[in-house]
Image (tube, helix red, strand yellow):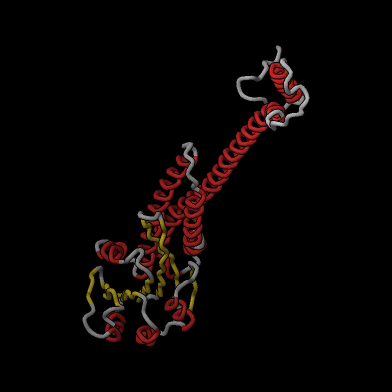
Length: 344
């Protein structure tokens, strides 16, 4: 299982002993030495690859099935003397402001820890180095490993929360910048990432509360450390709730601004149409008169009359004035520059 096993070691008296032989021999060696525990790290194993470990530790088949197929909510379950803990890992991708979700499944016993990781988020190499350099954590045994993993994951949650907050500030500035760009899709995208964030961290709160309240005997040796992790997680939870609420407010504000702009554009369009209609009404009457006298019939009234031309012009002017007065009295829009000023 060289590609599946990321790391494997026995920890005795604060010292790491790398396993070079068979895993079954490593389990026997840890149990023979006594005050030791074994930590095996796996990455996306198949059923066949996990069978050897299952036969050595006698893990519950339902927990093994969950660990292999993943896609579980954060939880803590007891199967005899073994704890099965599911944790969600997160990875922030700066290019698209996306949050990738992974998963770590932990089998924790009195003398062993088996970690099964899915996805690329939160590799546990840093956790091993931290534990191996901290005798106090090593003295806590498997509970210390569980604490260190939870602590790293929650620290990552806090970092991602700050990144989301920065993205949220940028979106708010775009909403109120007066730009015409539509940011609705960007707001929805970030809100979806925040909801995925909440789905990963929110169910972990009752898991840590169960440990802090002393209901998980195996972890009592590190209750104070778990209490600190829970405190950090509650801060992250409050920040995520705030981000979600601010995104909702930003979306509502953006839609209100877009609606106001559309309303203003519609009002301006209506005003322009009224002006065009007013000009068309003023031009229609003289156009009609000119059209009648442009038909070139020989027998038309006043066609050869000396005063016919000036009389036609006067009729056109009087007709235009009458139409203008009728529009003004009806409250209609009159052409720009000719609106009368209302008396004060």
